[in-house]
Length: 355
Image 1 (cartoon, rainbow, N blue to C red):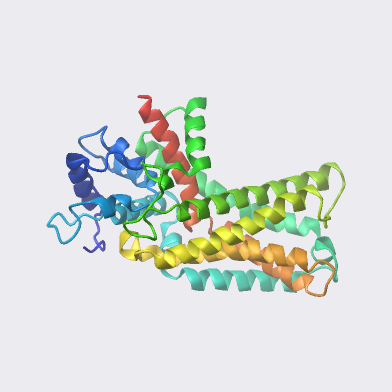
Image 2: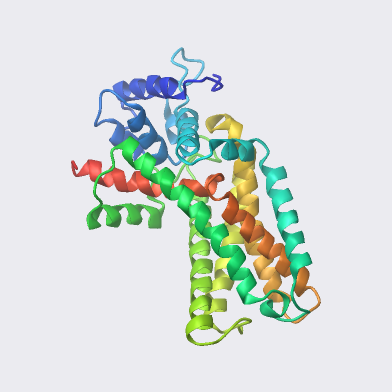
């Protein structure tokens, strides 16, 4: 079936109503228990279900109503399209997200090259450590707004999404349940715990779950490394570069390796998976985002390996280019899905307790 329809909600509503009548997949991921609470589905409820969906595709491979049946169900694709639409509607301007997903690789590559070129032209010193090439104050002045402004736009989008989907005052128990699901990637294990069908069709696999865990925990380790380095710089007057057994390196090197390994596996799995069971129009943008994650971590590792050599300046400029591109694209790439998915999991905890 074609999803080039102006009314994605109507198609998703039709499919979810059929699922709600059938309920064969009732024990599957978080979408199906949430679905059974209602008989009618508002646009907000459909957005909530879509952001609970992890696109594991188990429901499709188990469904008796997929093509060639006349019901023509493709729930993973229907929810993927609504999910993408929810991000684009709530995070402004939507045109940026649509442009990125239509021309993701080109936009990402051009941004990295332009920003890296800017840093090469703006270098303030010679070879050596980070701050011999670019002054600390220059990096802070450039990266702080590039990080905070996208976060501000995401926050505005989340506020709009929260209102549409019926979110209420957050309790500690809501956060506990939501973060427990995130930490274990619970919904990528399916309702049965055997994994999802993303890359092996009618066979279960934990591969996608493990790849996502590697990227998530790798990213958190890298973020922790940056945070520790910031504290060391400002509180202890210990600027970079740091030795192999320093806290930033003990956190950052494993984090970078996890991001590379997880990202490469995500690319491999995405190339194997059936694109018709997702939001087909954004496939290129999603792939570009995963490639960017790998580039951020790989250039960071290469930069550390090149410490003290003539390659530092070029590698530092390239690494900074990838990092700033990741920040600037945050509201419009699939990076934003983490914020919306966490919000959906918090709201689901509230709905389960009848808030």
